Length: 108
Image 1 (cartoon, rainbow, N blue to C red):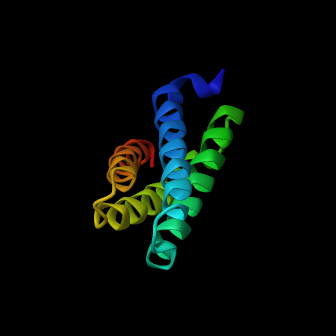
Image 2 (tube, one colour):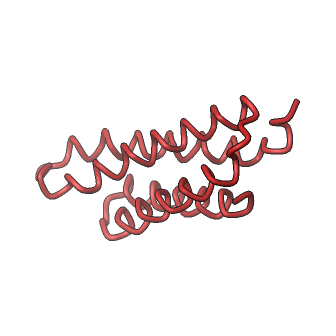
């Protein structure tokens, strides 16, 4: 199977998607949701991109490098934004995003 060489990246993508989805949901519960709007937007974009790249790698996409490059950029943007917030869910999301960005850069 062509996706076996990407098993570590696939796992990291899945973990990042889960962290972003958790952060997204937790941000919606924050007292000032409007202040979290950009965080919520980036969480969704990052989770969606990670899920897509995970699926694409499993399918053996010929665009792995290009998609990984885009995913790394989105993960880094999300991580940088989440890092600015003191909420535990944002900090955990930032950590997952930075780990995922690094993993994506390794195949980009």
